[in-house]
Amino acid sequence: MALPPSASNESGSANFPYCRKQKSLGLLCTNFLSLYNQGNVETIGLDDAATRLGVERRRIYDIVNVLESVGVLARKAKNRYSWKGFGGVPKTLQQLREEGLRENFNTFNGNNYVKVSDDDEDEKISNPITSQNDKPNPSSVTKSSTASKTDNRKEKSLGLLTQNFVKLFLCSNVDLISLEEAAKILLGDAHDPSMMRNNSAAKVRRLYDIANVLSSMNFIEKTHHPKTRKPAFRWLGTRGKSDNGSANTSVLNESKKRIFGTEITNTSFKRTKVVSTIDENSNQITKTHLQMLVKCEDLENEVDKSNFEQDLRHSSKNFQFGPFAPVTVSVSKFGATQNSTVKQVHDWESLASTYRPQYHNQALRDLFVHYVEAWKSWCSEVAGKNPIQLIS
DNA sequence: TCATCCCGCCAGACG
DNA sequence: CGTCTGGCGGGATGA
Image (cartoon, rainbow, N blue to C red; front, side):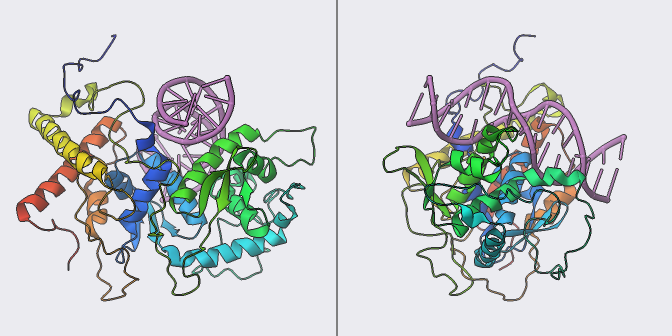
């Protein structure tokens, strides 16, 4: 069984071999934000997000975790997050700062760091990623370790790491910091050289992920150390933006060059060679389906081209939504949270998650995605206007 | 070569 | 038990 029966010819001409940049977390995050940073989004379904962005669920977790740790999102329930928007960031940041100061995150100096008391070691704090606002959480957290203990897993969570990383900037006077340093400080407690557990290298890998999404939000920026030449990150925070002003600082609109590794996102190519979009498991799929896919791919390419021509920054119109054209989103650039008539816009979310079985098979899932997207775009084409979606 | 970091296995948490 | 989450690190890609 050398190679799958595919190889026939299919998608060979127009698809790129594989471009890592198109799959970066940062880009995905950018798209994620563009997709949901519209005034009327209230809840976000993980499945829906994965579907719309054309990525595996796993990636959504990554993004959602760091976004939540900064206050842009809040977990509502399984599979469901509520959109807080950037308006909640300042507040969260403030909390982090206080927390950080309390935890000696300020012991870090530009030149010499004294290692921070290490994140929530033990279970003394065990705050599940920033205390929520809705959760009646008095200061008396004396509440025993309800579930900690075995939750030492949380101590290594992406979310916590993100918060600590941010604290580093918020609580000290450092302006530039490399990920290696951050990793060392964050969990690489220097206190106890005899036990360098904490494989700092592993930490760095996580920090790369975090840095990517933080970059895509322009909270930080990648640069180089003046002399060292080493890559390092600088905190941008909400500078330049109307801090405190109204509770919103859109996703910077300033056209900075391009954040770190930004590019268009996900096209369905795996890292490993060509692999047809569909694999053996497609025996359930009919011809029609395949044709549909082919057609869609063409469509996709067209979109790609036109998009490549322009600066694909945050405007919700110029970025890649998975394989197909976006669901006609008005480029309202997040016009404040118009409270308007609540509009129970459940749009596709509930619909999709309700009717879609949980595919454990990537191939099938991809197909489903194609279906939905294709249908949507066709719909809009035929109807000449928005498919179903949002009411006016 | 070294820096970056995507991919997806698989183990806990949860229902 | 099936799902949902999300550590974790192998190894590919990029500079």
